[in-house]
Image (cartoon, rainbow, N blue to C red; front, side, top):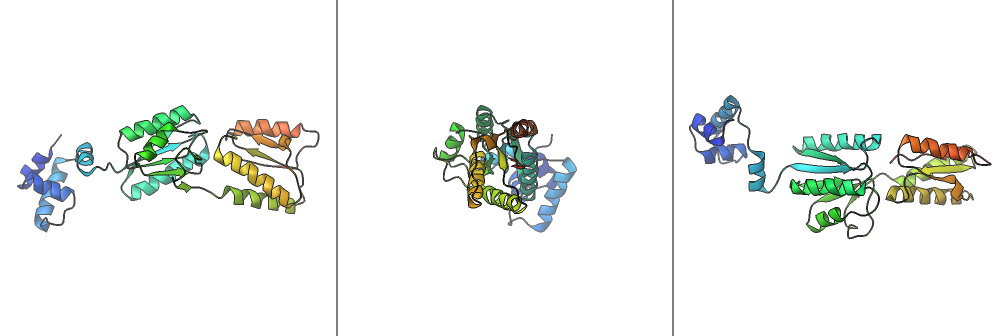
Length: 249
């Protein structure tokens, strides 16, 4: 594998000049830059990313920890993050927490060890000692869709959909169609999105003078099988619901 000194020898310049060209320094003459780049292409030279990160204290790498790769929402999220990062010349390392807090913290720890430049997380249930440690260390971090309340993580920005607004629009639509016996299949009660959507559903029903019985609240795990099980339970009620509001993430 060619080294930077081989490029310098081929181009007839110093190693320092090659370094300036590779780092796009403006002080290099055009003809010198062209000779260096030609030598790089001829030799198939690739800069040492590890060495460069030690010099610049940047890896141009982001970490993304998603709750469940089997959930289509998070699969699409991962693709969108990668597409946006690529446009900015960043790479993305993805970790799947599988809705397990201990696995989530394992991924966060591994990503921190790799000196990532930033961290995007859609948290699982409960707290996260490793994310708190990352925040205290000054690691740039963003929560996506879900978030962790308290525990020193309140200052972490959250990028999310308007779950409350979506639930309100859904209830408005169903009530406008004449439905009055409504139920909801939410995510786990321990997740911020799961709690928020049940609360929003209850508030929206209240605006129509309707109450939400505990029998009509289903807690799923964001997978289709749990949705089917909860729906079957709703249908076994003495007065089955006319519509159920599903959960997605």
